[in-house]
Image (cartoon, rainbow, N blue to C red; front, side, top):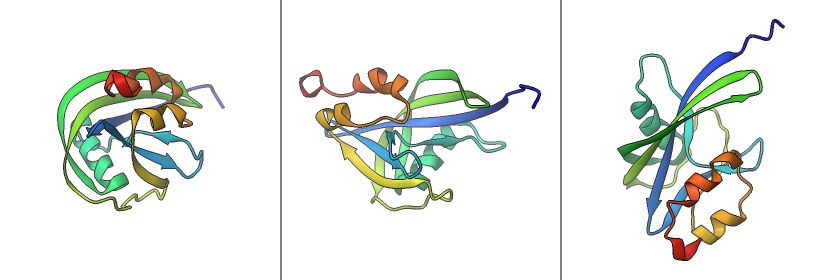
Length: 136
C-alpha cells in the first residue's frame, strides 16, 4: 500500500428530548454513539444528517444548527464529520439501517451517558455539555 488515505465525509446528529440524548449502539464494537453516517454523492451534510437519523433510528428530525466539524484519522481514512443539533419531529424507534450496523437505539439520561462505552470517546466531553448540569 502506498500510504495514501481515503477521505470520508459524514454527518452526525445531537438530538435531545426531556434531557435525554438519542444514541445508537453499534453491533461490531458494541459501543454507543450519536446517529451518524456518510454523506452520499450530491448530498449536503444537513441532508445526510437527517437521512442517517431516519435510517438508524426511524425518527424524522429537523436540523436546528451546525455545531462543529471534526477532522481526524481513523484507520486508513481522513475523516471529516459535521455535527448538527437536531430536533425530533416524529417517528418511533425502528431499524431501517441499510448497513445493518445498529444493535440498539435508546434515549440516554446524563447519568447513563457517563456510564456508556463510547465509539468515539473524543466526543464525550462535547456531547456531555448538552445535558442539564444537574444530571451529569
